[in-house]
Amino acid sequence: MLIDAHHHVWRLDRGDYGWLTPDLAIHRDYGLADLRPLLGGIAATVLVQAAPTEAETLFLLETARASGGLVRGVVGWTDLAAPEAPRRVAGLARDPLLKGLRPMLQDIPETEWILRPEVQPALAAMARAGLTLDLLVTPRHLKLLPELARRHPDLTAVIDHAAKPGIANAALHPWAEEMAVIAAATRWSCKFSGLVTEAGAGWTTARLRPFTDHLLATFGPARLLWGSDWPVVNLAGGYAAWRDATMALLAPSTHAAILGANAAAVYRL
Image (cartoon, rainbow, N blue to C red; front, top):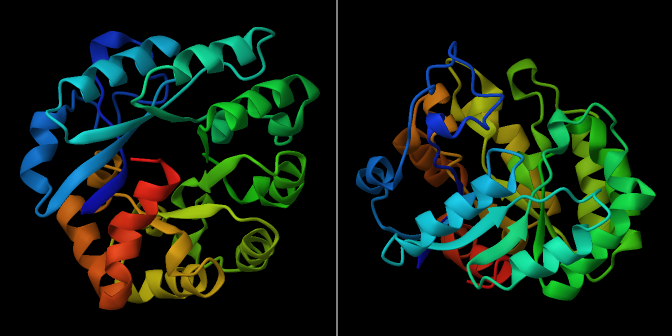
């Protein structure tokens, strides 16, 4: 089964997408009816939060329940630093469609926020509940992640969008070395997603390849998960262009794992 391990839907009238400003070409509503014609052979998806509110998480869970089996899992949000966070995590985890949580670390000015003492009880609660931590990070966070893994050895985690490397500027280093350390020091996975957005206008597979080859060499085909990052991918050519690039960048022998089995395992689909 082919799985899109990372996409979004949103409705502007919800009012909680602070980053989604009118100057962006994707500043409009997107729902599953817009996504379905793009899927091709993809039979299942993971729907990921795009707003730091529990209200949006409940909206995503309702969307998943009404999807006719397309959306097999939701990665939601709760305030992991709140005193009641362990209780909130346990409550959300009771919904069988809730597979993970994602703090929007890229938008938090304090780089070391995820290591704050008040956040650790919520992360421990996630591990107890079997939830996956989606890490929406950028290269400034990478040095922290081995310590995070050391503190929570039972926590399943996946790095979103390969930590958003500077592909447009060919900034392979030090991202490459830091990702290699994480791959060696943890059992975490990494999403093969969001890369064309980081590559910028006029991207080519040749521009992507040094980065994708490094992900394959470090995490290996058993720890990479393909995601479209739709509709954000519309800023960089769209769903089909990214899927076609993926097929060109990955050996056919890896497709079953990276475009399906790995996501099923990481998110217990």
